[in-house]
Amino acid sequence: MSTKRGLFIMAVILNILEVFSAPENSIKPINSLPKGVSGCKRDDHLSECVQKGLQDMLKISKNGIPELNIMPVDPFVVRKATVQFENSLVQGKASVKNMKVIGLDNAVIEDSDFKINGKLTQYKGVIRLPYLKVEGSYKANIFINNNKISSSGEFNANLTDIVAKFDSTGEIYEKDGRNYIRFTSLNYEPTVGNMQLYANGLVPDENLNNALVELANENWRRAYQSLFSSTRPSWEPLIIKYFNSILEHVPWDLLLLEN
Ligand SMILES: *[C@@H]1O[C@H](CO)[C@@H](O)[C@H](O)[C@H]1NC(C)=O
Image (cartoon, rainbow, N blue to C red; front, side, top):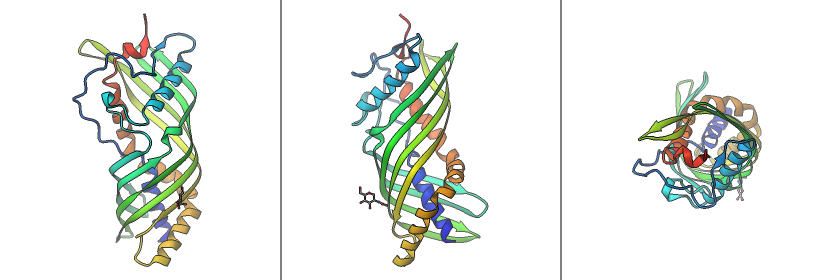
């Protein structure tokens, strides 16, 4: 049973990105890209240019970009997020509140491969994050063999050497006489070099709580892959929605300069 507790904490931590309530739709199309970011030409250097554009975008997003409704990236604050998870042994629901994520600002994008084929696009690459620090509070109800366990408390985690290969597809579509791009799929498989986590309030007894935390720290690697996959349906559509809610204000002709 205690191992399952460990798994549960993992689920919360791994869902740091399940965050985005889509920005309001009151934002107008922009007339030019934010200062410090430029569009790309359709030539041999397109992939490099897209990579540089994203990297530049990330740099200026540190404190957010209000005209695009981009939230501050570092620290990245998640007011509330809920995740559901389920496998044959354990089911449950957890919500995190006031979660702060530090370190997204240091993301480096590498090995970009961007292709356009008519109205369809494909973008593959690698994102590296040297570290992430996460802290917040949580509440959870989990069921193990039909026994309900409720926990709440604070947690924090330190992750290092996160590497995510991603592969995405997109399409160019027309709205109000202008072209825009949106993601149609986004797959990625992050690996984590190391992770240390801590949570209080898992169980009332502090010694047992700390023993469970230790167990989680020793065992997360074994649970990681299955948790990542099983929680994917809760966060993947939200990430796509979030990126698309930004992109729908950025006309395609600002991104791809056809002259
Ligand atoms: C994470 O690092 C901070 C220092 O930056 C430390 O205070 C905290 O205890 C660490 N958390 C874990 C779970 O090791």
